[in-house]
Length: 208
Image: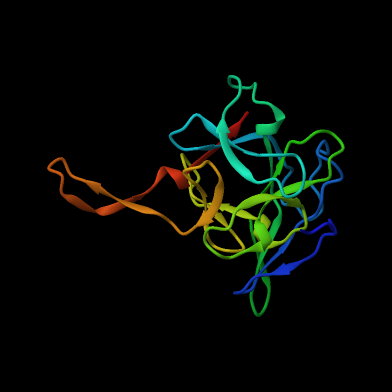
């Protein structure tokens, strides 16, 4: 388990580099120099088709990410179920220059004041399907960056480091896997050629 919170630049296969800065604290409002936009606080991550939300099962590094019933009505979710969405600078390198990719995010849990900054991450920076999601000290590695594959409605959430999708397992734990597809059926029961992503890989993001 990593303990260092020193920012570092990591290069992905294919030439993608990530540089993300630590916030001075969870209550800081200005964007860090390496961030594209100021953070968006008080967000929930809700699996599609469920009254559940994603949360860590603890408030320390190594806490696993799980699905739990949402507590309270709109605007009342406790800090344990709330996240801050970051906008780190992602750069796709070319032979001549680099291009900023503005659609990648990092997520920090809203922990008690004074906690070390932690981020949503993949255990061991794994690129393997089935690897669990957990909290780890924010360090700017690609496994802490995520891309929403749709701008509206429930969306797949892709990990930048692995290219795999956030997935809720039957036991409520959150892992990364390839895209699941299910065949739609016609009224006569016959399969259609079009497929749809399963609800276990679709998420909504919004205010607490």
